[in-house]
Image (cartoon, rainbow, N blue to C red; front, top):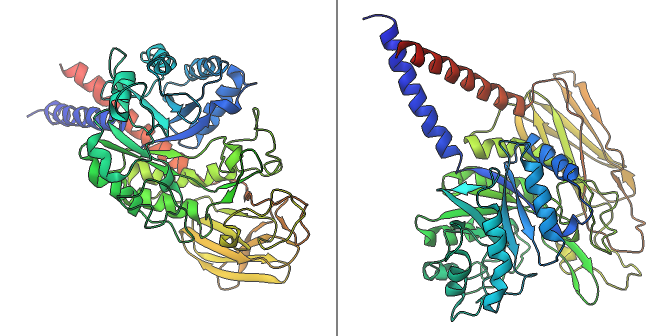
Length: 483
């Protein structure tokens, strides 16, 4: 036997495995971010390009384009798809906002079908099983002139139109999933926040927020009833909205106790059940869960967003996105400290005509944090006289600090028996104040220590991928030479 024979056999097996893995990865464990087109009125193709470049650099695979009924939105959707042409590995799909589109008459489906046919063959369109992925925000009351919701969606997105893989956000009870023949899966938007046990039950359709830690139960109730159809899980860092009449939308959802981290840990733990994850959101400033930069055309009245940058959450999520995709948390060789929290006490009486947000009592006056570390040490958090020292381990560490006075949050990382200081990080602007402005603001201030010179988790993943690509190239050459 010559050396060429076992080498050829190895390469044949490797190439087969690589093709199998790549084809499976192309459809499973993708991470998308919900991008509201309605807040991009002044976007150019370059703006879309910048968003895509930033998202992709953090491990995000694509945008779910929340499309509304305004006549200018198709132009921005076109800009998004045009920008995506510069990125071979970044994909897009349409998420029809059915709180915006009318959907009771047959003709109401025409604009949806037009968009479907327009992008079905686009090279940056997400394809699942050879069909274009589409989704919705709500829509479980839409009939499009048919006798039932299911028949209405069948007529609109499954008949005489480009082939679609339909994973909507229907707020219908889990027990009804078997009655929907129009869907190929379900996207659970509400499961991104803590949900009461009663609202997650099979006989209740309305989401009911609760003051408890998040659980996987609402996800599991849908997964158990989907059969072979795919499940898309929502994940979100925050929720605060503060509108008076006519919207009368003034409440918070519970985001304390590291909601973002708890949720990602659940998705990693249950990744075999979850085909896709969708971050809520990239740019929905109206509900304060944006993770992208403050840009575009935020809705009127969202002054609670100004000065509250959330992009550090992108750096933090990259660690968990890698774990969700690969099944294991990456090694950390670049110490990072992430801190977030409200800047004002929850229990305040202000001269705000809109009033204090519903569920305000669920909010704790604390700074929440995560330390991603390459080695153990001690993390010291301080704000005025409030201070804590927390032993921290290699990897991820969840930390917190109570806030009771006007002060600036600081952090310090020490190591060794002599507590040698290896990092001193004071986030610029993270100043808790007991003398707040006149309008209630329960938005989160988010900060992250600068990335160091070490190899980041993304670099480790990139290096691994590069090694596989090199081996793949070598085996391809060997196969050609020996054939």
